[in-house]
Image (cartoon, rainbow, N blue to C red; front, side, top):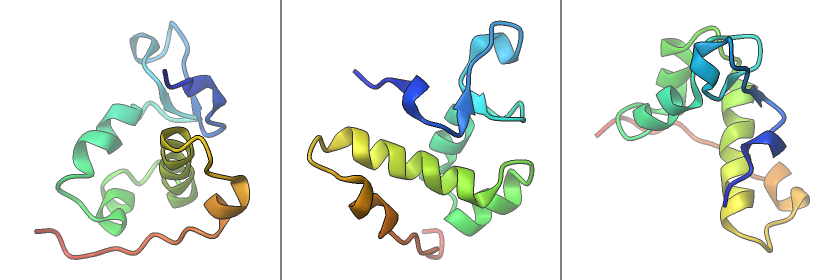
Length: 88
């Protein structure tokens, strides 16, 4: 099971967006970014959700990659590069 509390760029508070996981310092739910990944490029996500720093979106994606692969190391995560591709 994914432990969202281990992702340093998101937070959950009962009084903020009904306790949903949001990006720190914002009211933007993590689910909004994840739901839009299938339609928007990284650059478009950053533009659409301007209150969320691009580094926070990238850290969320790195966190998901590390969580999905138990042998994924922090060193590998730091070497990841995200490239925007045209939406299909």
